[in-house]
View (cartoon, rainbow, N blue to C red):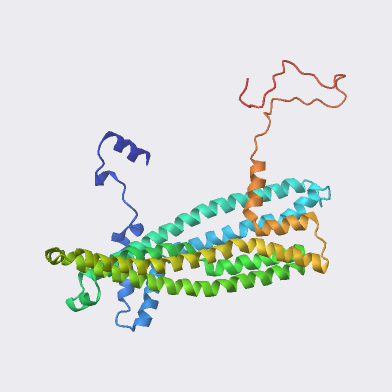
Length: 376
């Protein structure tokens, strides 16, 4: 990037000045592979074609998907070090350590786990965006090529507006879905690990947290079905509006000649109003799903601690901290790492002498005191 920015500062950049993408990340290299995988199953029924299309999309990026699965596993397991070891860390701070230097070892484990989490998260998000961009590119190219070869009969059932929507919206959703491609198995793993850690620290009190988690997960199902329905209706209304707009633009000369502009403008506004209604319903449903997601940790924590009080499970400071770290792991680990990253004193600022080597307890020579480390 430095050489490219320097060249752009000196002259107008040409296409030859911009570094080319790797073949697997460019449409020129990725689309032929994807096209061959799709065409290998031509002539199968519609239901099977959808399966084969999904299979072709997976096979076109299966190596990257497996690599991101490993990164997602590391990213999921790394935060568990905080809830798992924080009880022992609290016991060590209270002077009840099991062995010498236990605090240093636990602090090192926290630091290594946080580093692994940060690195795996950055690489995971980058790889998922790379996969999404590739899938969107090959799908949009396939749709565009298909639009060039459509027969006149087929074009009568598909307007230009619908084809544009398929390229710009439906293909783009493949890119969005790539960010959640590992969520089905990650959710099971995360819930399982959280329940194990809660049971280790809270005993039977974790059962209430598990029941609350299951209830909240089940609440997402009807809202998810509603959101899917509203998204379908939204796309239908969007296609109708685009189709009407394309027809009006093609016949604009006739509309101007007859003075029908306002009449057809009202038609477009009516279609936009219908589309807006479906969009509102979809956004409200998405807001409910988001609210349930972000309130899950609080509700599970309240249910777990309340059940511990009712059944008489003692809530020691270490157990409470461990459970809270399970609910909000990132907050706890960020605080620990931020403390470990604080600046230390300069190594030559103090000179320690053996006990009894001098009659002077404290001696200050040319002392200069300041909060700023860079002060002379």
